[in-house]
Length: 334
View 1: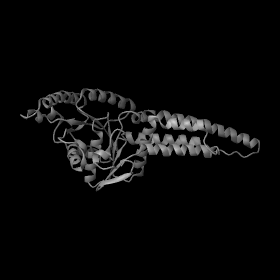
View 2: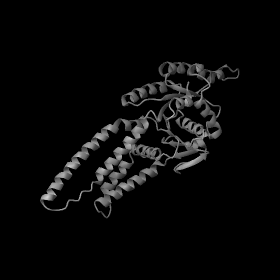
View 3: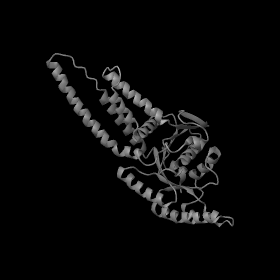
View 4: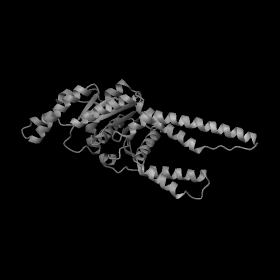
C-alpha cells in the first residue's frame, strides 16, 4: 500500500486532502492525523472541519470552535467553523440588501419570516461550511489543506447540481439582459434616462461562482486527493459500493480508500484475549477479504484500532505514521 507518502510522490502537486464517508468511521481522526504529518514535514498546514457531528476540538483536546484559524503546533493550524454564526451574518446581509434595494424603513414581516424559515433549512449549514472552504483555499495561505467532510449529502449533491444551476443562471441572465435592452429602447423613445441596477442578478452570479469553485476544488485530481474512509463492516462495504457508483455518475474520481478501526490479527492469538475480541477479529478478517476483493486497487492504508482513544498530538502521530507509510499490506490483516 502506497500510503499518503506514495500519493504525494506520484503527484507532488497535491495540496488539498478531503476525507469523506459515512458518520462514525473516524474521518475527523484521520484528517487530524494527516495534518499532523504534513505539518511535521515543515509545510504550513490547515485542517478544517466541515462535519457538524465531528469535533476537531475533541481530537486535538483544545477548544478551537468558532475561533478562526488556531495554531496548534509548528506549521499546524486548525479551523472549526461556527456555521450558525456564518448563516446569521449571511441572513442579515440579505435582509439589508432588500431594505436598501427597495428603500424600505424595515423589512415586511412576511418576508422576514420567509427568510428566517429558509435559513433553518439543513442545506444552509452545508452552504455555509462549503463557502468557508472555498474562502480558505482561494486565499492560498497554506501549503496543504485537509478537510473533514460531512457524511455524504449536500456536499456531493452540490457537484451534481453545479452545472444545472450554472445553466439556469445563464438563462436568467439572458432574459434579464433582454429586458434591459427593451427598457433602454423604450427610455430612448421617451427621451428619458433608464437606471438599471440588478442586485438580484449579481447575487445569482455570486452563488453560481461559489458552487462552481467548490466543484472545481473537489474534482481537480492534480491538486486534490479525494479519500474515502471505511471500516471492515458489512454496512460500510455496501455504502462504499453505492458511493462509488454515485461518484462515477458525477465524474468524480476517487483517489483512495483508508480502512480504519482494524483490530490487528495477532490480538486474537494472545492467551489472555477475551472471546469477544477473538470473535471480532475473525469477523473483521472476513470483511477485509471482501474489501480486498472489491476495493483493493483503491486502498492506500489500513489504520489499526489503538488501545486508547486517538486524541492529542502524541497519539495522532501514531495514526499519522500508519497513514503516511503503512507497515502492513491489506492482506496481512486477513
